[in-house]
Image (cartoon, rainbow, N blue to C red; front, side, top):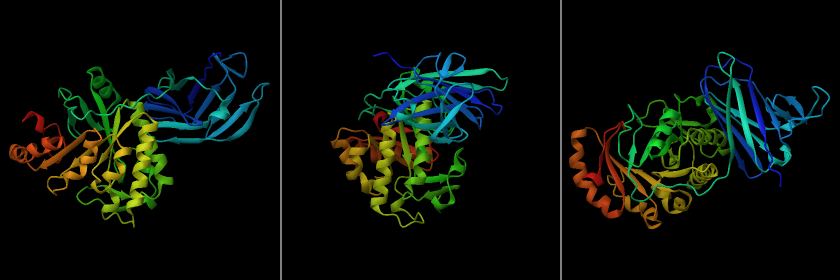
Length: 383
């Protein structure tokens, strides 16, 4: 069968700062999802010209392609020929914020193309064309941390890229794509942290959260409020866009935080079933994108959720004598990461001597860290 190609041309009408443009195309069931990430200001108006038959002599002539379809402002049009003649097809899902743009189109609306290469084009500040291409993602087996793989968790300060750990767990928003690429060149895997259960008022997509999903403040965490995880219809697009960003940046896995709102004073009458449902959606959305996903804390839900998640990450279970709840992950051959916090570094050795023997007996990869999660740590495996 003749291989079919799709060419996509993206024009930013607004002036765009010089940007590093990356494109990802994924088939998800009966849909194609196109995701564009720009490290720079994202244009607010876009036209997307789609060549679904790889024939430049058919469709609307646009340089090297002949476009059968046009996407503009969330609407899909089919080319009728004879100059600028387009037929309205319908509405498509279009999302965007200050980090990326993505849109979802039914496969059947693009002539049922089974395979494609898309080309995204945008204008930089000097009106030069910026170009990026990517093949359709055919997701293979998803990577997951091994039970003995070493890990470095750092969310603040200058990232210690000289750490010899096999896996780096770092902030999704604050870490540049270039840093992730550099870690990959060193043979490292990268896990990207974001909060899936709280609203953080400093994040670049904070404007995407309506007031209706914001609950009580998280005690001890300024600028952060619990989310109403029952409102999956509202939160789905926000969290999926964050996962798209993780995939576009090159993250191998994700660490969604605060996925235990039902057990806290969230301001909403959340139930165990509400939390299970939301957490399973998070795991599914991550896996659809080829990303491994950690279950963070939520010890009361481990037994039910272990099959859905690829490893566990816990904070302070030794303090509350509840670490045995993590054993379903060990039994399943999955990694268990954990941290015990100290207020000052000089307390670390004492805590390590108290905790590490039991952590290692249980098969956990445990660390002693300060609360700010900077570059300092004591790993039980090194003591």
